[in-house]
Length: 40
Image (tube, rainbow, N blue to C red; front, side, top):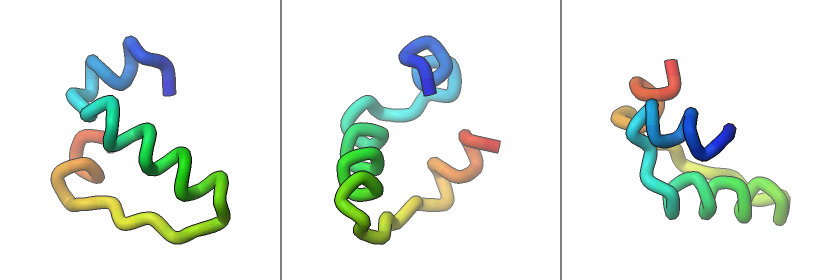
């Protein structure tokens, strides 16, 4: 996701950073309903 797309969808920068970090480490991530609604 590009920085422009992240801003357009109003997703916090740290939220996206932690999700990428955890996925890269092979861990599960928890995505809250508010974020899921913005990603649709």
